[in-house]
Amino acid sequence: GWMHAHNSIRCEVDEFTKALAATAKRLKGSSPAEWEVSSIKLWWKSHYDHVHSHHANEDDSLVPFFEERINFPSKCNADHQVLTDHFTKIGKLVEELSTESTTAVPNLAKAWSEYSVDLEHHLKEEE
Figure 1 (cartoon, rainbow, N blue to C red):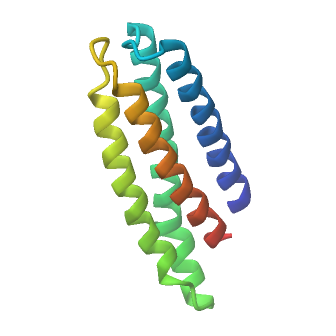
Figure 2 (cartoon, rainbow, N blue to C red):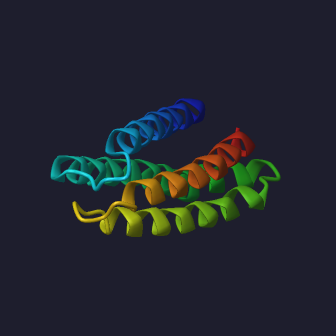
């Protein structure tokens, strides 16, 4: 089950990476349209809710179960804070998205890339 959950998160991250790249390429330095802004905001909320609930399941159920049986690495739990920091940064960038900003999408793509690297490392460690 854990691997399926991780793979669904990976799929979301990969698809949004492609979507952001395609959007940035299409915009060519211009500001996003209203439909692009609203789509990104809606997508981000869905991804945030998915990963947040996944981490809550791990922190509240799986990790305590594992800690009773094995020496579970504390680094895995600590990594959740690193990801939370990424969420804060990305959430702020998404919130600031507007049809007026020519740098919003490239800035979001950069932050997303940094998040995806740390997330993949974290998922592999847990597995």
